[in-house]
Image 1 (cartoon, rainbow, N blue to C red):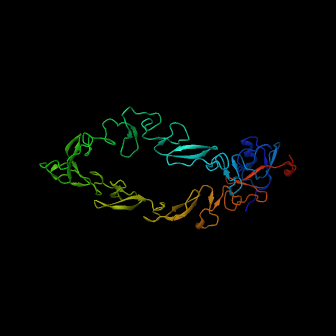
Image 2 (cartoon, one colour):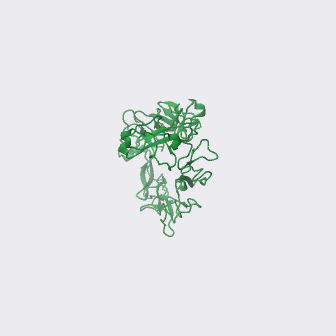
Image 3 (cartoon, rainbow, N blue to C red):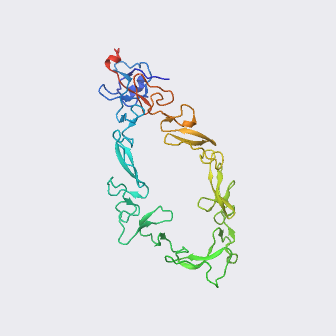
Length: 395
């Protein structure tokens, strides 16, 4: 256990003088004058010998909260509430930021509640009361605030992956519910809803693994069935090559490297996997005789720890703790100023080292409990001593 008592610290003249005097660098902030509010930091006991001619300031344990910190009615420890960043006490105790609605959320910044919009939503009128009122496909604010579409023009997604939104469709595409390239779309060939007959009609010749589809905005063009390719360029044997093999994985001539296999990825497409050090974990049924899955590092994946499908147990993971996979074994990891001081996983990271004066900054680091010394941000709070407490200092 370590207790922080009274300490003599040389007054700060410059950064160079501080370094030369050996002043404890664990003190946070500059040395205040007698009228300044409490500072906080970790200071070793015992006097610090100053250079000749420097003034002296005596520091003592403090129960006073530094600026921005306070003790609220629901506080667990003294001075444990940061009113500059706590959304439940933003700017003062009990001053909670509004709850989010899904389209928006609120956070506390510098003691004021700030609005944050979710993906696809925007705050274009600047009014907090109605939150993020504009949708990503709002024709008056298409993709961004102030971007208005022309009369009769829709604001819509421009791709199948829903990454780009804009007014109308890009050149070469038509609005078929989604922006569609009608030059090679079998269901919208040359025009929306113009579907091609895959048989080519009753008199059309048929070839192995081929069908009639859309190319250059016209139906009746030879195309390969999914999973096959025409690698030799000969029409009479159709699409003769499977693209689900190690020698032609996904397309003609794509040969998988050493240690890799042609398998089906998360998008349902054949792909050469896995790189050295990764393990293939199967997640779905086979497609064209190949398993579907993904590559993972089983030494660090919490959902595949040590082997595929071995998930680390849920231990009430929250903001202070998480379960991690360390070299193939599930372990408890503390974060954000929390610590597991009793060594038991049953209660997780049970100690708040940011505010607990018995464990300030770490397990067993104790502030001066008799003086009521507070712990703020993992440091025991100190302030300049009264002259009576400081005693006479010899210069």
